[in-house]
Length: 342
Image 1 (cartoon, rainbow, N blue to C red):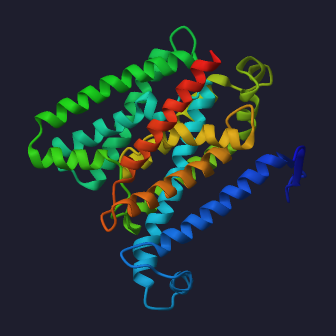
Image 2: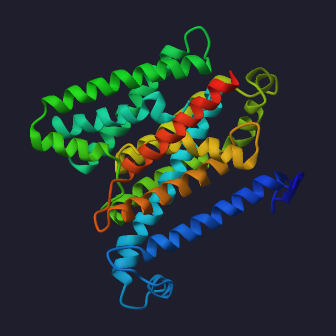
Image 3: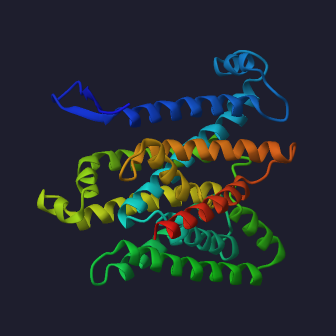
């Protein structure tokens, strides 16, 4: 299966060319998302048959509240948040040109945790305060990394090294804050840091969904510039692409996706690290394609959340615990592969 497929846009006479394998991978991932989504709607304290699920989605039957108000928000949150993390990971790995360049490795998750800890320990600790503080913390860490890494020219390796250092410092600060906090506050902080989709309902997801959608739209407007940048910064500059402005914009989009997810569900690690590389290998792309990365992230997070619900049922584990375990194995494999290649 090789060669591109051309799609004609309805307006403007423009066309889009997509590799056949990439198209097949995208379709397979969409099917996997639909299958896992149906399983997620069936799974709960009591099993609902697919017929009951479809009836509830249509507004009939006895399980409308359970499926539409309890399970559906969680399934959609896993899909949207997983896609956002996969997209953020792909952005940073493209910018750094390094498979280790993901938000959790660079310290953005730790920065979001620092912001949330500030809200929990200093402020009243409401959900709105945690969300705003988490976003501000991630933006602060990203700004520091960008300023330190841009001295003498922005380098992908420098970004990763400085990001790892910032991650370590933010993690040490977070541990100090938790140790000095009161017991109830420390328990709440550690629970948030685990990363969980438990208890998520419609009131918690509308705003994050809107923010992620807006960020995706902005990123889509830069698709042509991103394609040019993938060929090399120097070549992109010769074609009229503002490389520095593009990098800053996509970094802000990646930070926005990461911080939005962390503000609602806590830092769910390793999805942003693994999804882009898995998507790239599935599509056999020389770069890190954004759409396969986003869809892979959605499949990974929803699959991890379903496993988290099943492993110790009826107790649902935080999905961040399971993603950390899976991601740790992936990280060992990735490091081993890089060492052998070197």
